[in-house]
Image (tube, rainbow, N blue to C red):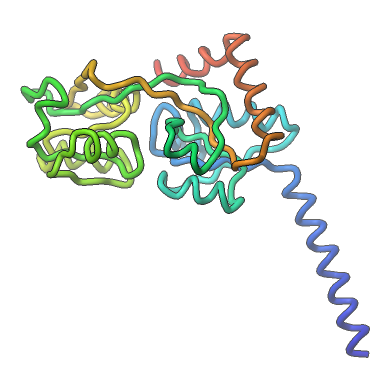
Length: 244
C-alpha cells in the first residue's frame, strides 16, 4: 500500500511539474534594474523605458509574454547565469570583462559618461574631481572609471542613482559620475544641478546579455535588434523616452 501511495504521489508531482513547465514556457523573463531612466524606470505600477520596450518586442518575437524582474544591478549577471532570468536588458555596457561571463547581442545604443554637479560648481571635467568626494553606482561604468581609471580615493558607491543625486543635493558629495542620458534625466527633475559632458570619456555600447551558449535566443534577439534598426522603430523608442 505504501508503495502504491508513493507511486501516486510521484505521478501527481510529475503532473504538477509539467503544468508549471507549461506556464513557464509561455513566459520569457528579463532582468533589469529599474532605476535608470530613460532605459528602465517605474511608472505607476509598471516598469517602462527603452529596454522594457525592446524586451517586449523580443517576447513578441518569441511568441511569449514578458516578465520583468527588478533587481540590484550587480546581481543581474549572476541571475542570468543561474537561469533566474532569460536575458538582461539594463543599459548594460558590453565590455570585455562582462563578455567573459555572458554573451552579448548586437549593440543598440551608444553612450558615454556624464558628471552631475551643483549648478554653481566650478567643476568642468573629470580632472577637477580627482580630489573631490565623488559618488557612483555600484557596478556601473562610472564606478569603474572613478576607481580604476582615475583612482579617485574619496568615493562613495550607491545602489541607485537617485540616492547618489540626493547626497549631492544635500552637499555630501561634490559630483556624481553616471551615464550621460540618465544624468540629464536626474538634472531635469532636480533643481540646482547641472551636467558636465567631458569629451575625454570614451563611448560605450549597450547590448542585451544572454547566458553563454544560448545561441538560439541570441539569434532571435539579434533579429529583433536588426528589425528595430531597419524599420526606424528603435529610434522612435529611444526618442520617446529621451524626450519625455
